[in-house]
Image (cartoon, rainbow, N blue to C red):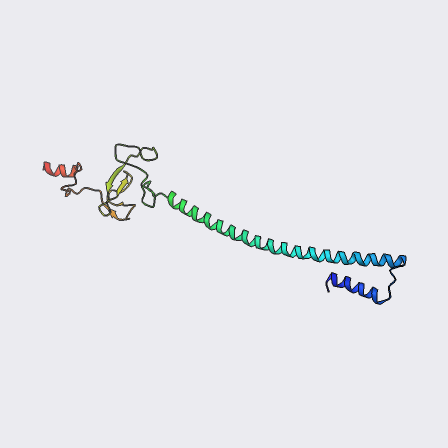
Length: 175
């Protein structure tokens, strides 16, 4: 039984017992019953509002959780992309094949970031992209960051038309 039903039941009992609202005690009890009825209706109204607010806060909590999950996924995606972009192999090239230097050779020209680069550049015989390497790298096993193929930069003297100065070819001519 709800509070309003209980208050209505109390009024019914008062009417059924030949209640006298004209006496001082009767006037007091009638006013108290009236007050109980108003309080019961107010409490029921407040309970309904609290239920609506509880439902709304539950929806907000679920929505906030979804936003938090989406934000976490977005942060993971952004951080994952930044890690991929920032991962550099031992040659100073980014893993995705983008070179850090505009032009690198043994004349120590500046790269994109303004740092000097003392190394060599060659063209990958497979994909044609520019590949940079240093004296620390094995010239017999150069790895192209673009296509991943291994090739040798050691001249065997059989390079007839490469156009670059070739000590091995020049030595063969002197013989």
